[in-house]
Image 1 (cartoon, one colour):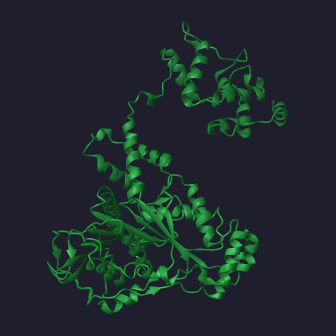
Image 2 (image 1 turned 90 degrees about the vertical axis):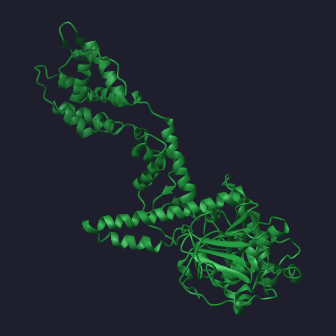
Length: 595
């Protein structure tokens, strides 16, 4: 027998379908097949020896290509033809020959359990197989509930990554935490027996929200508390584990609650654009131009100037703007204040005047969270542009939001698209990047041609402050003799903090009467431009000529004196009717001093 089997096995290759199930692969595995055919039958005829390997393979493919319900139904139909009801006996046939039970099982690769299940069904006249889940009363609404909640998580709570389509949840978050919050959100509206199962919730997540991630590692900055929780996790004991879990869940809840409040402000401004102006501003990681994909290896050691991109989103008026330009300006809050001034002046000139302004900013101290930006807000109120201004910062490490989503097409597109010059950026690079994201609104893009020297203008009039970095919400409002500042730890706190229950912080010691000086672009250092000519071979004539002209005279990109002085005569747009004051009713706590 062994000699015959060896000859047959070496000359009859076993082919398996890659899409077949694991059970089929196991059944057709050469070693398993040979072991099965070496079975010594208990019957006298030794019927296994009569099988040919290719016949066994064909029979097993027929059986194992079916799902479990189909397998059982097929086996019941086959055994029914062999079963004698009167004698309660079964005579098994393979290829027209009578075989024993063990040989029949070997031939088709059927388990004894499945064989006796089918035989018992025949004896009980239960011949139709129905999958157990098909009898359940599934409710499509459960799937929809999970989908709607996860969509809300993506839109309102997740960190939208500026360089990918992924949306990240806090690194210490668990899917079970999200499911628990989901159940808490629906338990008042549903009977407990009707709650979607954790398995259903996970399945919807995996099928429809594969871009919603809980990262184990993060290339960007991580929240301080998240880092501390990570360090504590390595030294947990039974006594400290429950305390650590409470801190972890509380932190995640606070992050989610602040994001919910962030979304509420956006929704409010979109619903009532005449009552409130909400602006979000953020800076993208600079790219270096010329940029070429595929990236030439010879460029690795060559100098290229930085190209800055700053996004500004006007939520109430549904306007997305990208300010861009070579790195010809200081990387500080002068850029933030100037771009805000340009945008708010445009709204004011167009009659889109509201009593209240809110700003969503990143926690960067150099650009946003500093006394100069606070003083800028005070000057806007002092000159009657607004009655109240509020600035909100999300928790550090959890600040990727709407502005970052605007950067995704650019950040991903640069790995497939060339950007050889500033002209190429506007004419080709931006449209090409957004062409691949048809759902994204293509932003309006504007050159950064000049700034105002706000810091030098404001500094002589500002009192020094400290400890403001720990607060994430600031409010400025007009009083009889000036403008006062209030603050609180986060937007979730009910009360604003001032010096006492009535008065806030007087940040300004005096108010400047003139206007800030113009800050024209400076010339790029020659070291940043020395390698540009060696890259001409990768460019078309238009981009090559642009660089040739720029290297001869950098001032070709500079605005004229007339353009830079355009707003000087009516800098604060005083010919527009001022807006009414906003009535404030919040109780204000006695604070620790900032000054």
